[in-house]
Amino acid sequence: MHWEDQLPTLESERVSLRWLTEADRDDLFAVFSDPEVMQHWSSAAWTEAAEASSYIASIHEYFGSKELFQFGICLKESNTIVGTCTLSDVDFTQKRAEAGIILGRPSWGMGLGTESLEILLAWAFKELGLMRIEADIDPNNPRSLALFEKQGFQREGLLRERWRVHGEVQDTVFLGLLVREWKGRS
Ligand SMILES: CC(C)(COP(=O)(O)OP(=O)(O)OC[C@H]1O[C@@H](n2cnc3c(N)ncnc32)[C@H](O)[C@@H]1OP(=O)(O)O)[C@@H](O)C(=O)NCCC(=O)NCCS
Image (tube, rainbow, N blue to C red; front, side, top):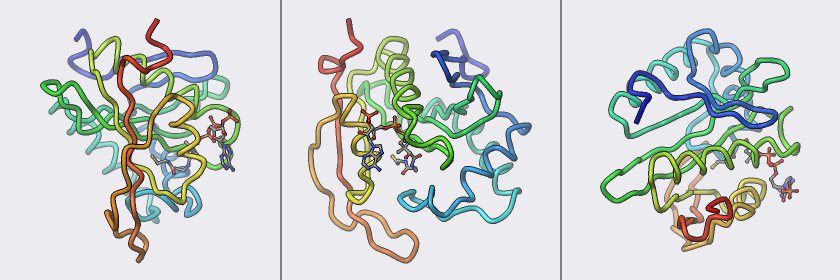
């Protein structure tokens, strides 16, 4: 790995995945404070900007342990952070991790999720040498299921009553993508 101090910047046509800093606090707050965006997330919508600052600090802290790699999704056109794209539970021994993504509401439906996930998967498989990426998705989140299935993720099981969020008990659709099934492998 040639990026011991902070994450590298990963580029595609419209977005770059990059290291988040305190300067991104307001952009991040706009994403994570929207109840519609947070509807299927595993924690409640933020109400105070200070939550963004402590979130950025925790991203940096977990990066230090090399178990969580959370990139900001930066829209090149405007140089704004419109979401985050993450590998969590990174296990180099087992060569696997879990992928997650969140985008602010104005950025939905334009293929930005697809573009971001494609870069993340390429980095995970090619650069990190992982062989399996997992996803844990609310069955009532068709956008997210479609996004991951379009990348070749397969449904591997339904985990019942796995989350308690927003006062509700939620199941999980657990998906997996093996490197040999990944469409970007060639
Ligand atoms: C999930 C999320 C990242 C999707 O991002 P996005 O940029 O809208 O996704 P894309 O535009 O790349 O669309 C991906 C696919 O979703 C599908 N899709 C889009 N809108 C949809 C809708 N309303 N219902 C069902 N499927 C839909 C399409 O099949 C699309 O594929 P296509 O490009 O071939 O048409 C975004 O909706 C989001 O941030 N949601 C809130 C946070 C969240 O729930 N994250 C997932 C937790 S793992």
